[in-house]
Image 1: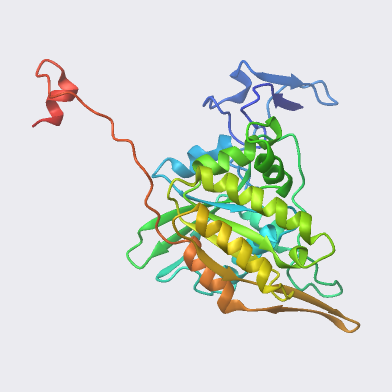
Image 2 (image 1 turned 90 degrees about the horizontal axis):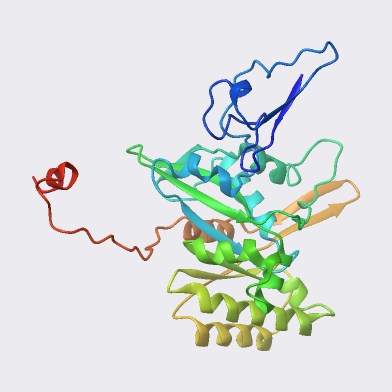
Amino acid sequence: MTGRCENPHCDYPDVQCAIGEPDATKCKHLSIRADDEGNEQAPDRTLFPWTGRTLGLNDLHFVAGRKKPQTVGVIGMAAAGKTTLLGALYLLICRGEEVFPGHVFAGSFSLDGWENIASFLRLTPGQRITFPPHTTTSSERGPGLLHLRMSDVTSVYRDFLFTDAPGEWFSKWSYEAEAREAEGARWIAENADRFALFADCKALSGPNAGKVRGDLQFLIRRLAASLGGRPLALVWSKSDHALDGETQDAIRELLSNSVASFEEFSISVKCNNFDEGSEYVVDVDALKSLFHWMLSSSVRRVSVAKIQPSVWDDCFLAYGSL
């Protein structure tokens, strides 16, 4: 027997029933198909409430049930190195590197998602090192989210979400903010606590540098209009490719005129493929400096609900005044 839930907000049988039915066969949304013997039973197995893959927006309650996680919006055009950066973060954690001062890795709801990215960056006997494939554009309307939980020496946990979204979303959003294809980019702009904006040095110094520079300027203007004082980092990715000072100064000037402040980081993950094998040339200290910034505390604007003075015939409000 195989069964599939017809509720678009439920991923059964990969995870537990979204509306909380302990026995999925009793869920009104479950569609049952008979097996070769004609049996019509739901699978008798225990499921985790998450798949381990990259999280979707419907999975956020697993992370946010204890307290709100900090969301890092990783923004940039296609092939700017966003996914590679996330893979490097995970691999540094696997090596035991301190990516967040005073904290250690304490778990993740998306280990399969991290592994799917990092597997391309690992040295496997008999295979060459490659970069993670381009994050494809799909019919999904929300970004993929990679979860990371860190703990300090007092076992105080902090949860982080990193967006892994295709650059095409940001290209569309920068030119047409309300486009349907840009819904995922809008979600990131509205919900992220801080942003890492990627400037691809290889593309900015390549044959299409003029168009790349123009696209980046449009993205900067669009992001600046949504920033609202949240922290922003300008990440010069693939910085091993020489970029003329005029281009860098123009991008810095536009950002300076558009936002109150921003940090700058230069990173490079260069893969050298030699006849006898492959190797990476990585400035680990530069990566760790960026990760320290990404995992730092953010101050979000909070709307505080206004509550009327206690009313003694209302048990809830009366309790709050004791």
